[in-house]
Image (tube, rainbow, N blue to C red; front, side):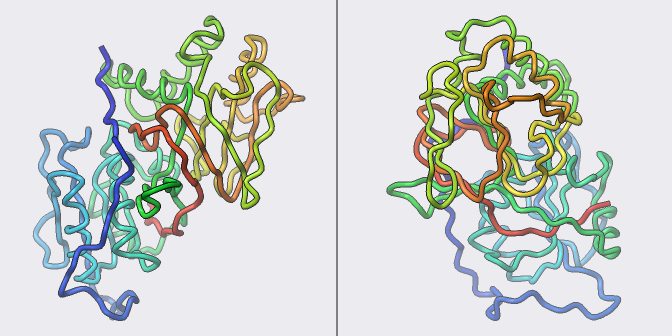
Length: 348
């Protein structure tokens, strides 16, 4: 049996901890030429690549390591880094760790984030695949890359509930719903069989397509979820092909990344910004187009066949089922989804 993914009862509410040493001017310190960068490391010992391994970083007065016991301790650790005026924030963990650090850090760093480096230590590392970070990257590699000024800018997805808790939020890079939720839970079985990163993405994607080709519309994989999608500032309801129940969408998949794991290209030629691919309850005949779509090809009359590839500045999502953000499940409800702050990532 697959290991269940973590399920959040609600989106996290993160407040900035009180810190006597916090910077007062709201701007990042200027380093003296040749000065070693001040580095803050969030180390997640529960990440797949860290299990049973100690984090060997050597002894340096410029490197500060925090090992939060759980998510609730992240704000305090990040506030301490902010008070030290770190130049480089190193996240040692997978996509879920990145999501939690960015979510907690938003209230602390605001619009003045340090440079960020990610060591790919999770079961899936979609962000580092997009950034071109090698799987064997170390802390020293990240510090060396900081000196070389090799940077990539990315904006995470910002998910905010609409209702009683608008100050709650979560930041991440890969989001999905409908069959994507089912596939993510199924993907834990791929991890259990020893498939990780691009291999896990490839195995799970192949299994999803197989289910679409064989299952009926009443099957969990093809039924999807009941959801309403409203696009842009005008909140115009997204068009529907008329295939299947118009109140249901078989799949929603969204990301701000420009390169996806396993070489898949679900957004076709769309690369920049907040991108989505949405499937209505497509026919089996249309399901045969999915492998071509994943290769980045755009068959004729794609939208008429129930497959939509779009970009939008924001999305209002009302959904009666859980959705997934960076590998973990969040509750049904109504959400505003847009791009978060622009962040600068150190790359190889």
